[in-house]
Length: 197
Length: 197
DNA sequence: CAGGGAGGTTAGCGGTCGTTAACCTATAGG
DNA sequence: CCTATAGGTTAACGACCGCTAACCTCCCTG
Image (cartoon, each protein chain N blue to C red):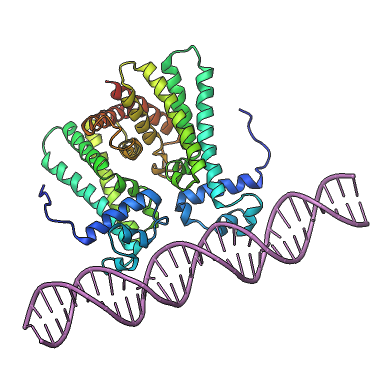
């Protein structure tokens, strides 16, 4: 991973603050003036960087879905030939990293999808579907007994489990990031194993 | 359970439709005119039944949290003296019934809490906290080894798992309500067992 | 050193939305 | 039979919000 050391661009600042605000108060609950104020400029100044409020949400959601999918694809590729169990663990680990590090995005991801333009929503849905199918494939390699509809349901449910991080209290009250990640990982594996039983 | 046979009152119709609309498009995304239209009256007519749009959301959220809590208390009481495992199963079953039968409310429950007046939000949060603590208590009876913070995280995560029903596709594409309920139940138990390991 | 683009600013327009006001109608009770 | 009340209606107000217009000011470049 090529770690970023240079300062974030203004666009990136805006996206980050917009994500936080959208997650806190909902897309319709946040005004452009607030987003601007959060990065030190005022409302209409945002239009030098984005076509509109919708465009910010679209870029956020497409970005999340895309990064999740490409990350999963990369993990699958890197683990090619190894045991399916290890691949599943890698997928879980990647999703947990995301859920712990980008909590506002996780929140947006399944909350504000319907506020997108039709074309953007279709794109996001397609990326999400590919991501799910990837998990389903790996899951059925680990547990060949599980039927496809059940596997798909199980994957969605485990996403619900992993995406519960925003409800886990502020990062201070947690037992520590590492411990939380391990707990979530164990629970996800336990849930999958039980689904296959 | 005293099954209702009489027709729903207008207030109940409004609440039901409002819940559906809020879940679909978000609190700020739905206008009072739409809510009115959904029950066959027009916008301002709603004010004969509710003090305002906020009041509808408040009644919905307080109602959900309250019913969840009282249902859980009742289950705990009925199972008094029996094995802790059975009580946990009963709690899970109750939550699944709710998640499958009242999907719009489940969605609202963790999505629109921040849109409430301070006093209402505090009330809902208190009810939710009691509900969680009740689960934590039972969970720690079943798995005495698990520490309290971990138990609380585990409970929140399993709520995420069980509340994933809105993402499971429309009731037609599911393997059937009973099968879905069983799958969710197994996964919840598997996740808890893994959390305690 | 001109000048043009990048990135701001404030003012204001147009539409939407929650809410209130004023008025209407049916029905149940004295 | 009169009338109060429950439950509607439409019109309209005021606030807010997304966005555009018009303008300003650096700074980089030829």
